[in-house]
Length: 290
Length: 284
Image (cartoon, rainbow over all chains, first blue to last red; front, side, top):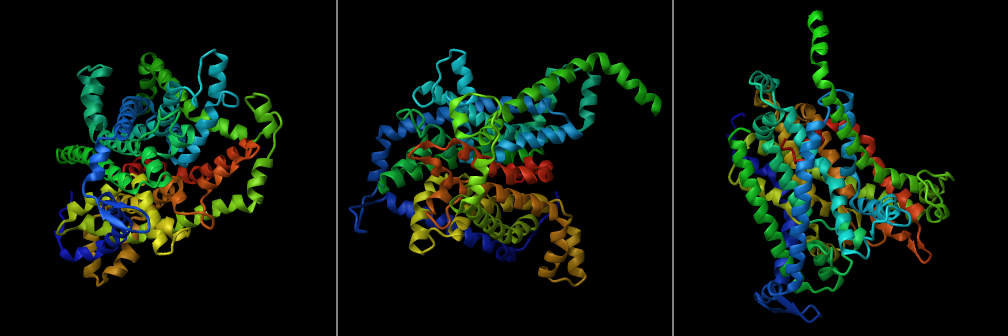
């Protein structure tokens, strides 16, 4: 780690970023804050509404239900993707052509536009023309993601696992590669078994990257919109209406500016709060030199 | 030396052979799981609609490129790709141009509020696009930029500028500070030093940052769809066009999907060793 010098003139170098991000983040965010405390009857006339919208949203079951579904979704995909990603990383070839080959193929789903990911699974799961749906139907399993809640949930979860497990695997793999050979040699001398090597060498050494992976997966799954929207449109009923889908429905569909703005702010705050906790843990791990 | 290499495989073979196999099996299964849905999309894009709906087959019996020809000859279709390309390239250029000096400042200097600023940048990566969809729509409408490429490019800066700053900072930290100092002593001004000496040193970092800005702008749909209607409509939004009166044109939809995967697939080999670093915002 090199020593940094103190130089306040460095602010000039940061200034362009500051102006640009202020334009594309702060101004819109202030618009949201503005709407969240006002009421309108059209004609651009606004009235002070104070915290009314926040109170309304907090007592509204709609938001709580969406939040519940969102937490369930994020929880399930984290519980699947993190262990699966670590498992895949442990099995990846360490070097040579096959290592590169795996890296490239695994990255492919990460680079597909999100609505195309939705389209792929929409097609793949259809009972009439999709491989998955057709096979399940042929096996006599009742599966229909447009009408059956459980099928819809399984589809969007498998889709997310398909889409993002590679991210966890790639990060875990990067962590594994940074472990010096000497560690493994020491373990061999101590005759540590495979589990002990994983538990006491690989897992602690991967902790830093895993925290990043969990942070990223949490954040991104919490604001997921496009993929489930393309596949299920939030249905059947409201069964897969996650927070973002609900918010877009409210803001752009029904144009309920006040409630939508209050919703937005609380939504953003929840993400910020949880991410900040992760970030603090991450920075502390960094300081411990991991 | 040759003796040792000749002996080791023989000694470890009986024990490590089953292990190698199980690894290969796990990886094959996982890669198969990843490739199957993509294969199915490609398979469908090469079929006629009659075949897609009429019979179920694992590969196209009646191979046709008509779906691709439809897309590449119909202006309404290929302009979607052109529009996407325009705003994506604009966004990449803007993001890199502002992120380069900022990343240099973060990697070299302490200044008032630097750590807070760095975290604040990250919070923009955490902001749900759904929260920003409506305010962006109103902001860009009010300044007359609605349905222009630059509006989408600026909107995508929301998450791409922090991304670029974080990735570049990660690469710049690896460049020894002595190089800067030597250059200043040699009489280089900041601008000349930065362009002539520093940027070539972190060329791979710039490449990786550009790739990720490109990618994240390319895959995003919600904001680009909200901010455009006709003139700057991205390919992702054009894809909803396939739902017509006669039902969904599955073949063309699949072909359009395949074509959106191509740009990423073409360059991924070059950044394969930096993929993890890029997705983790330079923190690996």
